[in-house]
Length: 260
Image 1 (cartoon, rainbow, N blue to C red):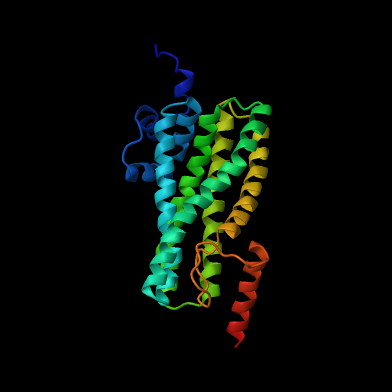
Image 2 (image 1 turned 135 degrees about the vertical axis):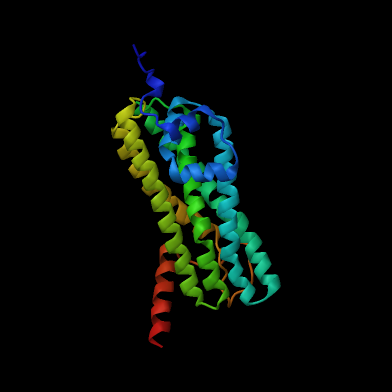
């Protein structure tokens, strides 16, 4: 007679077992698993397996891949001069990971406390692993789009077009990553009582808050691309307005340029 399956093994397929039984391997293997076997990551996090090792791996992915995308954002400065280009590339390469981590530092405490109050039975490290998983996927998507944005930056595309292209890229990658997190947690709600369904709605609200905080953080850390008619600055000072006004002004400038 077959022995009954243990609760921890219910719902695990081969890919899930591979993730559940082994420590995170090489970075490329981890990236492949992020794309193909996210359900296994959710199961391992819910079971509390190798949380510290995965958290370090996710942090490494976020910093390296988002920094790579930041470098490509600043590469538009190369069209003015080499010195301006490398300074903007270095500055943006530091600021994009800072953007993610600083926004998370502002938003994460309230998410964790509210989820605990709602009955979520995940500890601090497990909840942080879930968010880092989404940010890792976000960074991976950004890095995959980097060749496209770099192509337009180095082929003399309009500054406002390049800036809007980065806004669209961030919106696409962030939305896709958070949607993956949301769907993954919905699936886990059906397998476990550790994450009640009502907590999903709280996560939806938190994602919106995280997005608004992120846009304001980006405005505070600007410039990332570097306006060609202004001198290089690590942080832009003396400009009024906000992120949304800047995006709208770029839309208007691009429309005007198209008509002309």
